[in-house]
Image (cartoon, rainbow, N blue to C red; front, side):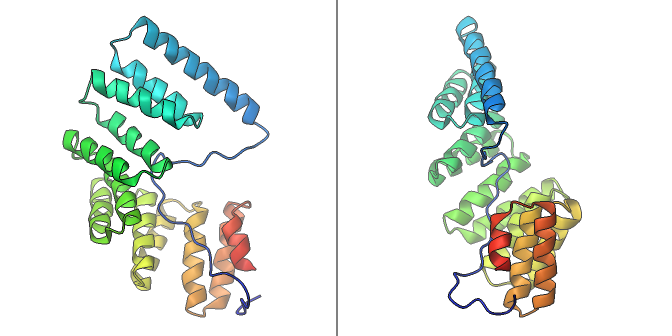
Length: 232
């Protein structure tokens, strides 16, 4: 199938994956999950009514709403939690994640910075902040945030993956390949990394390598649409 892509759009890649930012896909288990989420929401609503001045209950209610995809309600619960106890770094981090899902990147950035004011060693907030900086076009700050996340927790695959995306976007393909391979070393089943790595091989006209790596992406995640698209 390589190398021709006449009439097709450019290769598709996946970048900017934050820890905790998850796209929930409909499956045959959706009804059961909805029951679980609803039970969680009901549980923490009850806790909030019985203990209205405890921040943790509202934090957990925010998590339940977030997992159910009810983002406005989740934001309200996290804000209530922080109003009761503004010292909770993880609640700020989760607040940032919800803002990211709503594509409110400046608000997400501020939430992650609030996390780091309270806990400078919060590696997830550094990683998530890097994703937001990249989306805002603040690439040097994104680079620093990813490197800080790696320094705090070496071996966490998503940090190398996101750093690889940043280098790929800048056209620094050798550095991108290095980071993608490190991501695969630490998480060999991260299919999105294989897809992006294969794109680089394709652009370098290394078609046999690109084909093999796209196939690896699909082996680990058969429903990875971008890899099927890139294979043509």
